[in-house]
Length: 267
Image 1: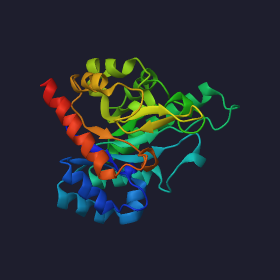
Image 2: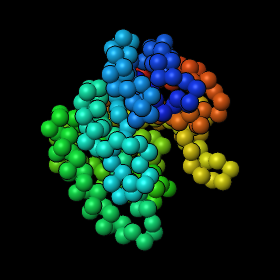
Image 3: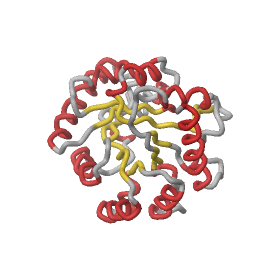
Image 4: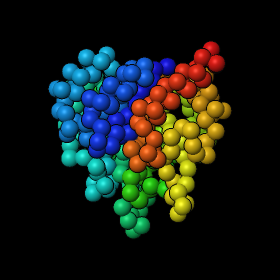
């Protein structure tokens, strides 16, 4: 299993090139690309840099935001992101559905609309030989970020499309009993697994945390992922504000060393 680190881990003080160096120095062979990286460096320079360091692209974030476009964190259209994903030879283009936006929005109506938009995006992406990845979103973010929340619902949406997969993010789906079940029984439907740990802040808001902190017992949980039939990439997805001032290079090296240790102990 190959490891990857999402560019989201970077703050304003770390350049994309320094991020790539840290990933490469840790012996990791892939990265998740964000629209922020594209704005900072440009597609051509990103691809050149990745080629220089022998790194592949595990994901490009993010298309979608169908129902609540005001939350969309980037300026690029889905058409552009499909084109960029193809250019970077990304394994998968992440799709965030968008939340309800308001308590007045009917949930079932939003579901129908999202399913229709996923169908259109999958068809468009197929013409460029791009795989899209639908990411179920933690229900606490149902109004802002995503109204498709369960793994079961998401997998029913993607099944009709050969170029659509699931993105399973521990932050969003660790509570879902189907997380391990899908990896063990339906792994061909999973395009990417993203990991972090999860905790609560002082106001009881859920937050991402480094692997060394949080409520998930990763020493028992991760082997269940690593011993399943899933053979894709394992991507560390943390945001810079989640690091609690820990140096980025240390967080990346810890992810690399400990995951490889777990893999070795299993095999």
